[in-house]
Amino acid sequence: MTDIRDAIPTETRYEPQAPLSVAARSACPRCGRGHLFKGFLSIAPRCDACGLDFSFADPADGPAFFVMMTTAIPAVAFGLWLELTYDPPVWLHFALTLPVVLIACTLPLRFFKGWLVASQYVHRAEEGRLARPAPVEAARPDAPGPR
Image 1 (tube, one colour):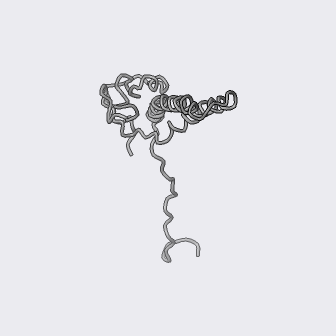
Image 2 (image 1 turned 120 degrees about the horizontal axis):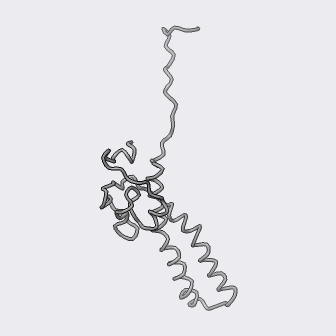
């Protein structure tokens, strides 16, 4: 597999971009100017400014994990606090808690996905491969050595 940065022409050099800054702007991790997304969460095929191919980007379930750990737990805590403090009817829970949970969990997904894609680019992350030892040559009866 080729290195992500091998595609950079030698005459064009880009300043390193901070992953958090790139994620906040939803920008290309190489040039910082192009768009990373073509929709709300769909990654564009390539940068419209520098042409970087985004096929290396695979954040998988990472954004969902970070959202659950940072926003879903406080949003559910809000629902529990509402229940224990005011004991509202179920319809009021749906009217108040459901929008809080949906908004709190949906909005940061784009940021976390951009952050993970930028981190993959900056750290040259690739698909994991198993390290296997070199095959040992089978002992042949005519091979020299101790017997």
